[in-house]
Every structure is written in structure tokens, then in C-alpha cells.
Image (cartoon, rainbow, N blue to C red; front, side, top):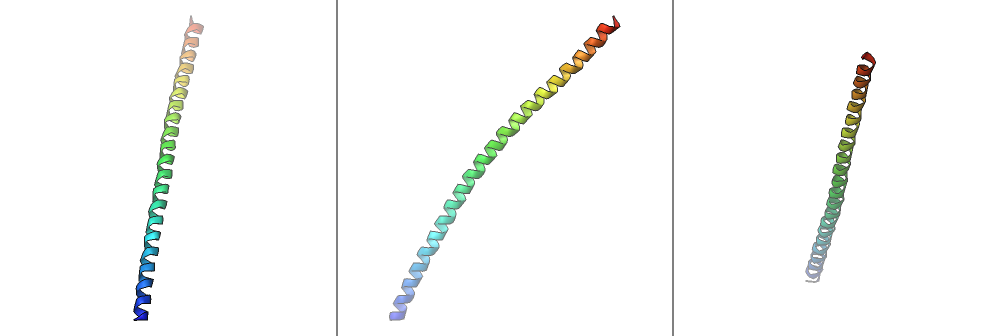
Length: 77
């Protein structure tokens, strides 16, 4: 009878510990998820910024080509 009671207490204790482990895992997963969400958001922002800068570089390149064409026209006349 005493061993049975001790076994029940150990089982209750084990279930409580398992519940705590599961709760901790859920909290850690939630925190990791939030960090990943923020990181993805920052990555998207950086990509948008890089695309905008790439467009600016392309525009400058086209302007420089236009200047070259204009200077060729001026020198021919």
C-alpha cells in the first residue's frame, strides 16, 4: 500500500514535470517564432531598399549613356 501511494505520487510528479517541459517548449517555440518573424520583416525591408538602390543605379547608368549620346551629337555638328 505504501509503495502504491509512493508510485502514484511519483506519477503525479512526473506528469507535472512533463507538463512544465511542454509549457516551456511552447514558450520557447513562440519566442523563436517571433524572432523569425522580425528577422523576415527586416530582410524584406532590406531587399526593398536594395531594389530601390538598384533602380537608382540603373537610372544613373541610363543618364550617363544619354550624356554620352548628347556629347557625340554635339561633336558631330
